[in-house]
Amino acid sequence: MKKEEPRWLEVLRVALPLCLSYVPIGLACGILLNKAGFNAILTLLVSLMVFSGGAQFLIASMLVTNAPIHTIVLMLFFLELRYALLGSSLSQYLRGTSKRFLYVFALHMNDENYAVNYLKFATDKEWRPGDALMVEHYTLLFWSVANLIGSIIGSFIHINLEIVDFALTAMFLYMIVMQLKNRLTILISFVSAGIAIVAMCLLKSTMGLIVATLIASLIGFALEDYLVKHGRERGYLLGRIKRGKKRPVSVPKSDAEGE
Amino acid sequence: MGYSTFDHILLVIFSMIAAFIPRVIPLHIFATRKIPNWFNEWMKYVPVSLFTALVVKDIFINTKNYTFVGLDNVAKILAAILVMAIAYKTRSMGLSVVFGLIAVALLAFVVPI
Image (cartoon, rainbow over all chains, first blue to last red; front, side):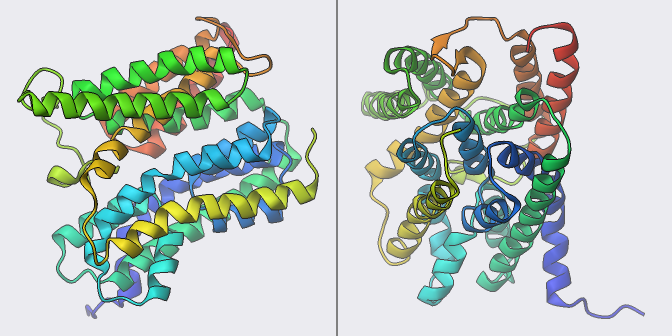
């Protein structure tokens, strides 16, 4: 006897693969935050309030290197700036919702649940803002609990920090790979790497990261502008990189930017 | 370490604000208005620049005195190449992170991390 599935279960089914992939990353993040001096309550709090793997890893690793608070917050701001793009591309689907809904939605949006929701909004006519918010809350639940457990594990066992810290590096590498759409992005990635090394060695601080991000992104912006104005959209640098048979998952047509 | 619990709480609060502002402003503004083009164009290159800079810091910079270490961190370099390959093939963040961690843990036995 097949009954109509309740909505929360249906939405959970959509969100579950993502929720499960949060578990190992959340555990690693919790362990690192614990090693960086955060207790379990603060770890839970930061998972609920910031809810961004990259940001939380960054907090942990910058605390370990004794970075001043204002540098950490500034770095975070730049790191989270990409959400401006994600938010603006979702906004068209959230028209007609209340201000309060928008605030809660914005607070609990992150890269991955954005990708899920964007795909659902784009392909499923029945997908409502309320469902999207529910996806966000499921992912938030799994993420926070994994962080909390990681934090508790971290206080019992001794783990080589440098190894766990690589979780962050791996995550950023993954995000870089997801960003590579044309040869210009690859070029900008190398430009940023070069500037980052020089700037960090000169400034002797993580300020070098901000300098590299600003200069490299502006170079990319200027170069693309130049190439487009000179009719090279289809040229070597801006042509899309052809992928193999595998189609990119979850990023529909021209809206790949924010991911 | 030179942080008090108060510093940590302060950090969490400021982090929340820093994380919240970029997420809420566009949802707020662009629910009714159009996104300016230059902003979108610029934003396209912010993530890739930032992520690269962060990866470079993790792999090629000694953060104790901010010196360039070249190719000293062999384990991380090899694991990084593996992670990029897995990310490209599978497009799964979970798999990329888990295999990256396993790779760097195993490589640490044979080469400097």
